[in-house]
Length: 118
Image 1 (cartoon, rainbow, N blue to C red):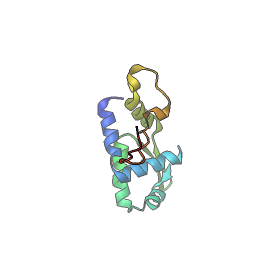
Image 2 (image 1 turned 180 degrees about the vertical axis):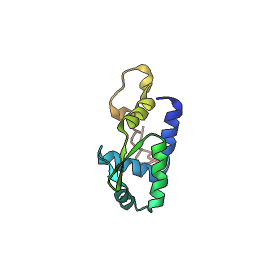
Image 3 (image 1 turned 45 degrees about the vertical axis):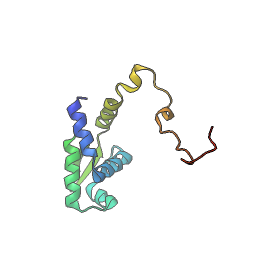
Image 4 (image 1 turned 90 degrees about the horizontal axis):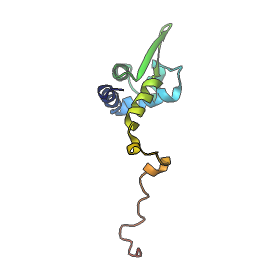
């Protein structure tokens, strides 16, 4: 994936409604979800949904298909995987990656003023 395409995809996801929409479509699977159900699930008006879907389609993250009078939207899993691959392409500086929890934030200290620590 080229940097410009990654920026476009990440920019499209950098908005709360679009991120929620994309996550809903990812969870739904390849069959997708009709526009009306998406609007109900996200509690957004149809015009608002249309605007956000358009942004995700333009970024290449969502595909649409018409079945009769319904439009179904689905996540483009290949595009999603390409974004993840772009972000992790040089992970760990070329060294084998450790377990997934090695990148997690450490547990916060129980108390900042803990004077019992050595």
